[in-house]
Length: 169
Length: 167
Image (cartoon, rainbow over all chains, first blue to last red; front, top):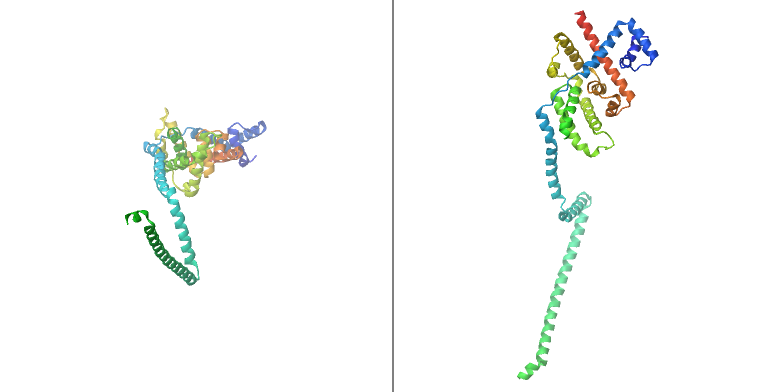
């Protein structure tokens, strides 16, 4: 068995995990090969030494930092939650909707290649609306005049048929 | 409390993996920040320690891949061994300390996954099954990585002994 092939079995041998036949062949090789015997000794030394590496104590500063992590997280989340609550107030939602629609319309207008047609249509619609308002105002004025006349007629009629006035005369 | 129960364990894992106390302190903080962000994902069917160590292992390996610590020097072993109890036999104590120094520095020569497996099994004393669970790998794969790592360290030790004998 070559040393290279043997090395692959050496760890399992050191851990006592080899079958009897393999163990016997490894032991035979170890008797003839001082290098592999030395490697086995080093494997055992390495395992024992690694297992006895001491644990070290973390410094008090690290402990303080670790304890502060949840507090820092909570504080950061607190500030964020405050800002979020402010923006997500239900009473502000109609304004957000209106602003969104307005921005959408402005965007549509801004990217439209035929802006002058939109300008004309808006101008025409505005004027049509304005003249309608004027007409309505004029009609309202005439209705008001007619109502005034009607009221005066009613007063005059009432004065004529009033029993008190007759009694007084 | 999580910090009292796990800070030493995680700090030592990070220190053994990274080899630098300063780096280990930063990594431990990063791991605890990740822990607090991931607690909602904890699967109650699993052992919390294994789950947390998996989280730590993932962070350490990711950081290792990003920064390639193997190019950096580990802390001096003398500083690391400052807490070692003094041996009754000074000569033997020196040999033991030199062996540990070689192994401590040798950890940096191992690839990240192999190094992590060796640390969990050989230094932290986990079983193959526990190591496999933390590494998220089959037991056979973990066994072969640990064997590779141990052989590499043993060869390093043998080479160092031979060079001392030659001198």
